[in-house]
Image 1 (cartoon, rainbow, N blue to C red):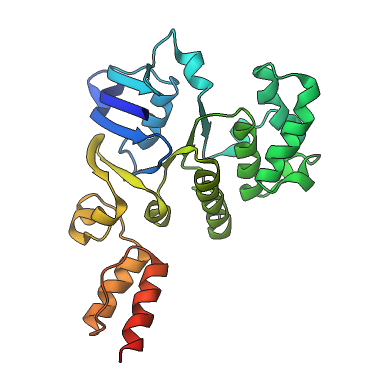
Image 2: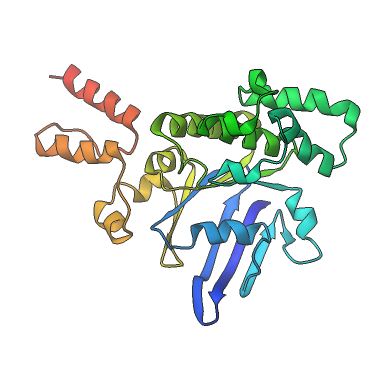
Length: 275
């Protein structure tokens, strides 16, 4: 069973101005998939369509084989959690504890069980000591951790991150990316991350590339990211490790083109050990 299946999806904010154009793709259950594309390519629009926050013009969306429509939208929203780029827009409670509790109350969780659930998911994102703090006083990375804890507490099958690291500094971005990877590996959740961060794409199982509202590529990061000409056509950067690979080759260092910095370091060490 696929976690998400999108068939010939089209959407327009204005009549005759489609921003998503006949897009089809599949997200496998348990996979970590990233969606990238230049600004205006339709990435965040697709995230909202998957939650039923926008009404499609045509096409079909299936979440775990359930067609998304007015009759099923509430059922689907229990299966899918979304973390937006600005966590301030998701805060409801006066404290971190209250904020995590809000979603549980909406899901009619027994109040007697709430404290244990809140403590558990605060610990999952390393925010236990901040449970009685005001969310607005936290750093950007801490705010995103709270937003993620609130979503996890509602036990979704699928987590969507809509540019969740775009407003963070490099340290906060790396912190949240590590957490996303951990959630995928340890909890076996299906992760769909809409991102501008090419280094996050490197760590994903699959990547979907959008260009001007259309599907340009769907497949493994390893197959597309080293293709400098293609990535330039898509107005995207290549990973740092790939740039460095090409630079080393020009200097006569015989290493393969890599997308992972860790793998490139291993290859460079291997090259020097043979000299």
